[in-house]
Length: 452
Picture (spheres, one colour):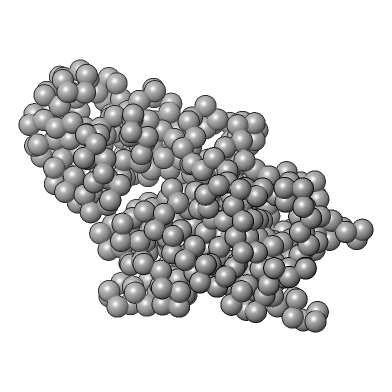
């Protein structure tokens, strides 16, 4: 490691590793520090899904897509918010990003054509074959190791180093000063900091957090101490169906392909078309638990996802040949659940909106044998953070930038709307992490070379 690094990356999730790889390949001296004993953060807990509008993989599959279409999709779900400039940037860069990961680096990913998931009008998600974010993280770790980029786990940054002119010049890590020409904050969001969640996202503050434990909001606090602007701080990613007691995500494919969620009274309580994030607050509002109801055909589709297959082996779902038997297996009112399924099947057969205004029925009506799984809502990721420009430079409240400081991923403002979870589209967290991580390093190295 050189005496003064070109780039110090704080955080070893997808954002931090993408930033480090990009800086190294541009000729920079770079190192990563990570406070947790294991790298990956929320990236490891995700499905590893990355939107890639206009990628060559879509073209090969005959899927017509473009950045403009993705911008329209994102604006449709999230509306206008504090980071509209990033929505356009990310839509332009996500296709080339997927090609960089797969073609240039060798990531084990593929275009998903089995489903679109919430927020996308065409199949544009690219993910590991396993649908596990850990596989993407393992690939990134391999790329970091291949380049001999120093990665120090169990080494938390305590504060930023600031010179007399107010520029960031490094960080104090476990009591040691590490000097760097540029610093990237890739520390994830603040969902594991209950005080910050209560302050900025009160509607979800009582919901259990299921994300990475390292998401404690240091970037927000460091940035605020330097006068950084914040954006979209009330936005978050929820998940409506965390299997209980397994504590793993019940694949939303079970709902997207035609399943429903019911409460303890056996009745549906909202429009599942809102998606796994947007529907989380609705699940929280109706009671402690909900139950996902679907059928064996949908189950067979979801089995292609490793995590779901693992949960099936764990017995997360119960089976029955009638709605009444299904209710008995789950401890729900038999007559009411049977009526709920029958009413839903009627509108699904007709393809018309029902009392909950659902419009997408996919493989429904549901057919025996039926499956049911007990679930609860969860908080997974905050979607607000430090305001940054298109080069991921941290912006000051009132204008200007904080010299030498960049942010990406959960540390930076997201593109999932101004508040709540309804603006979250699948892949928004990872795509923000990877695009901004790369943009930060490219701009940092450009500035360093220009000043040489």
